[in-house]
Length: 307
Ligand SMILES: NC(=O)c1ccc[n+]([C@@H]2O[C@H](COP(=O)([O-])OP(=O)(O)OC[C@H]3O[C@@H](n4cnc5c(N)ncnc54)[C@H](OP(=O)(O)O)[C@@H]3O)[C@@H](O)[C@H]2O)c1
Image (cartoon, rainbow, N blue to C red; front, side, top):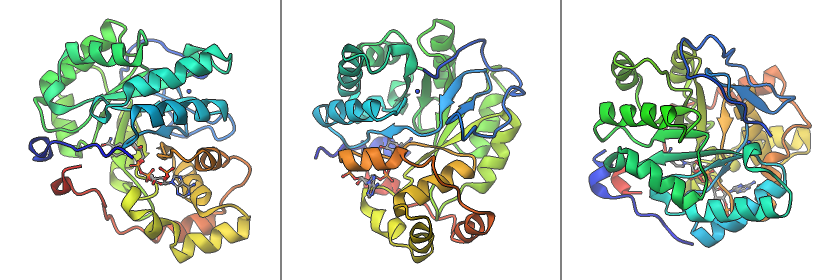
C-alpha cells in the first residue's frame, strides 16, 4: 500500500454532470441533497453525485482497480489530487469502464486538486494529461498554504478555458475564504473538509450556505488510522443493528442526511460496494440527534505528521 508523503514544507501549511455558466450569487443552490436522485445541484447549476470514491493513499495500480469497481457499482463521483500521484490510475480505471460500456466520460464527475506549490495553469494541464481527460468537473485548491490569490486566479482561468466545469477549495478556513472572495466574482461550489461524527463542521456548513456551496466530507471514517474509533462507536453500532446495515453505511447515511457530499476512501471491493448501498434506509430524527451529540469538533488529521 503506497503511502503518500506530504511534504513537510507544505505541511507548514458522477450521467449526472450538467454544466452551465460560472457561479454567481449561489441562488441556484438550495443546499439540500436530493436523496432520491442521489445528487446535489451546485451553485452554477452543475449536478454532482452525493457519494463518491476517495482514492488517497492508493497507488496508480490500486486506484485503476478501485475506480473500475466503483464505476461498475454505480459510483459517478471520483476524488483525486495531483499530490496523490494516482491521477493516471483514475484515468485508467475510467477508460476501462468506458471501454466496457459502463459509463461515458460525461457521466462521471471527476474532482482533482492543486497542491500549494502548484497553483499554476501548467499544473492543471498536467493533471488533465495524467487523467487523460479534456476537463475535470471540479478543481480545488488543496490547502491554503500557497499564494491563494494566484491560486484562485488559476481556478478562474481553468474555468474560463474549459479545463474545469466547477471550482472550489479544500481545507480553507472561514476567514481565509471570506478574505479571498472579496477579490473574486466566482464563488466556490464545494469546500472539502475533514468531516465525520466527531468533527461535524456545523459552523462551516452554515457559513457556506451563503455562497450556496456544499461541504464535501473527507475522512468520513476518520482516515485509515482512526477507522475503529468511528466504526466501533457504540451509538452508531446500536443504530446500525436497528437498521440491519453496517456501521459504515450508517455513518455515510448520516453525512447525506446532514447535507454533506461524501467521498469514502476504499480499495477493498466489498467496502466500495457497501459504501454506496446507503439509499434503502433512513435515519430517524432521533437517530440523527444521537449522532449529532457525538460531535467534539475534533479533527484527526495532523499536519505535523506530514501526510
Ligand atoms: N482534501 C483533503 O485534504 C483530503 C484529505 C484526506 C482525504 N481526502 C479525500 O477523502 C477521501 C476519504 O478519506 P480517507 O480515504 O483518507 O479516509 P476514510 O474514507 O475516512 O477511511 C478510509 C479507510 O476506511 C476503510 N474503509 C472504507 N470503507 C469501509 C467499510 N465499509 N468498512 C470498514 N472500513 C472501510 C478503508 O479500507 P480499505 O482501503 O482497505 O478499503 C480505509 O482504510 C480520500 O480517499 C481522499 O480522496 C481529501
